[in-house]
Image (cartoon, rainbow, N blue to C red; front, side):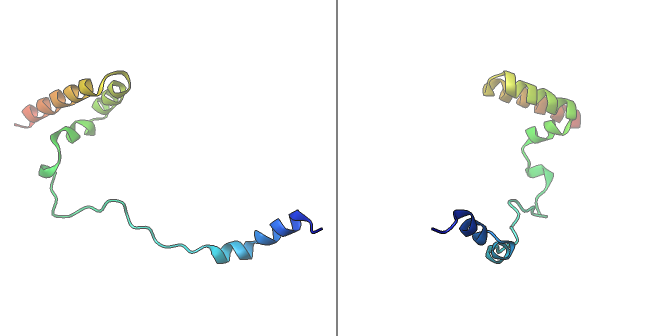
Length: 85
């Protein structure tokens, strides 16, 4: 009866493993279009550029309902728009 360890080791030699691997370059999941501008972005995304507001949002997301998070985000985006104008 053949030794099972001999069979298993023969199948996983480095030369066998290297021969079986074929690597292809992966395409990026998202590509940026140079024609896009910041005007096309959702205004709420700018709120999270502030580190303190991003931390607050993360805390809210763990302790509040999605609706409460949405309300907070809209209020902060509105305040940000007032500062820009």
